[in-house]
Length: 296
Image 1 (cartoon, rainbow, N blue to C red):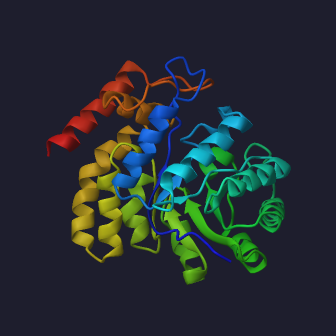
Image 2: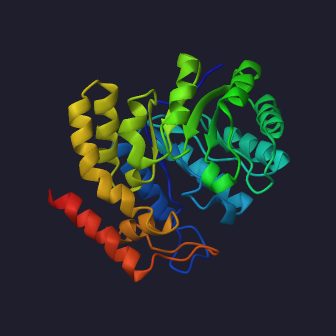
Image 3: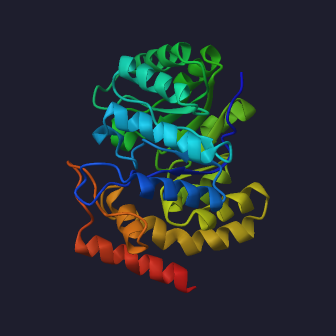
């Protein structure tokens, strides 16, 4: 089975909207994709948390998949977020992603329903067995209220050869350390920009980054240094980026990163309800962090 390589910097893409949020700004989206590829990212992840997937229509999601595949044209892997808290809808969205030509799909653990470990296992296995391509699981307990235990992950890996990667957004390095026991069977990507270097030091092979929407070359450089064993260089560049990473989450994602893109005239600040655009204070924090980073 062909699979994408979950290694390097992957960007959790924002979905640029027109100023009133009524429609996607397709020109800005395509420019964003080109900027990511030019910046050296290895993967493009549309329709995740940062992409405001819950507010997108099915038609919008399909178009985001298709345009990412067309623009990437093999220059970067396209791994859309297709998970939800409905197994049936997750299967449908994942099939649509593969029909669009995606290289893989990212499946978030079902949120709000709060399934048991057996429920999480069943959900993933049902999806994995219903779709024709490789999957990256997304464990983010702070948003979903459920945590995929490493023992449950082991059972999934035994049953599902097409589960090949994991985005670890557990807000620490402990989970990554434990999951690293699966070795080459599972590629782990950091799900928190501020922990990229620490997580890569204990087994992660890269990051699914929010900050790389704005600074793809800089984030890719940190990851490439770590993969190349140049730890001192990676740490130096990582510390330079830390104020930016922190600023990206001073208010709910993706409002701050959209403020950063707006400051560079790459997209509007518009987000869709129930989110709201970055407050003046958050906007100032973002711009201060960008000025500090760009001035060094």
